[in-house]
Length: 370
Ligand SMILES: Nc1ncnc2c1ncn2[C@@H]1O[C@H](COP(=O)(O)OP(=O)(O)OP(=O)(O)O)[C@@H](O)[C@H]1O
Ligand SMILES: [Mg+2]
Image (tube, rainbow, N blue to C red; front, side):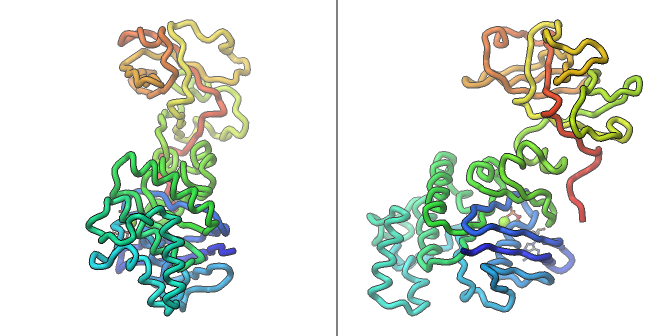
């Protein structure tokens, strides 16, 4: 069992504060992903856990043991790098054996353990090749084997798939995930690819400017973003201003119905609503949905009139850009019914969104809170 506890860690490079005040509790055996845009501090946090950097404040422990004064090579942590970082002059087998030799493992044990890990990463047939005779995906497997062969308590991976082509990335995501589950090794994975993060992880920690924005399971990150930054960074969202009309909060000229937990001051301070494209439903024509709310009555939906601006048929789905009130546009994704495909530009349509699918944020809220 090796849970990782990061307790109020701060790290600066001169005047650049790379990590503000990071506290994370990473459960043993989980696949935990640090997700965020370039420069948000992902690599810094990973390298601090590995021991390549010393934090300015705070402490890091693995399985209850405080690591702060333990040097890199004694931390029992495996690391896989973006650029493979394998030795070009050593064969696959020798690359993998390297860490074991340093640890003075016996020759017989080295042979057994290297053979075992070659099997795990499916490289047995390439054991005697040199790195330049391997594809990028194969080199990355060597990097992974090298990190795993010492049987570390924790595996750190810094964008291990980012130098690979699209299809291979997708294949390796599944492979990495199932390997991690088989081994049960606590894994901290870095990516700036939100789809990769959602697909692979038990927990996702979204970072921005050295500050944790939200740490939760992928479902919560996607459906209940903690702030506007998370809502815009993870997946696609439409952002629409909330306005007061006759003292009632409205979205695109339509009343916002009853929503549990609706901010009491909705519309009174400046707010913006976010709606996922796949949560907007479409009806052709201008007649509202049959159960559209008679004015003033309770409805589970917000309905608003729109016009078609642009649509593209992508086989499985139809993507549509629609104009709504005040010259704003929304993107929506729906099943490609025939009647939708025939919609010409400027056709009138009606859109509806379930009230409970709408999230609200303060205008100007970037997400960073220091
Ligand atoms: N050695 C260094 N010296 C000075 N500043 C650094 C150093 N390394 C990183 N930084 C700065 O610290 C911040 C965090 O960098 P970091 O490499 O951790 O980001 P990242 O999230 O891994 O980004 P990317 O997705 O581009 O790899 C950035 O502002 C970066 O410019
Ligand atoms: Mg990085």
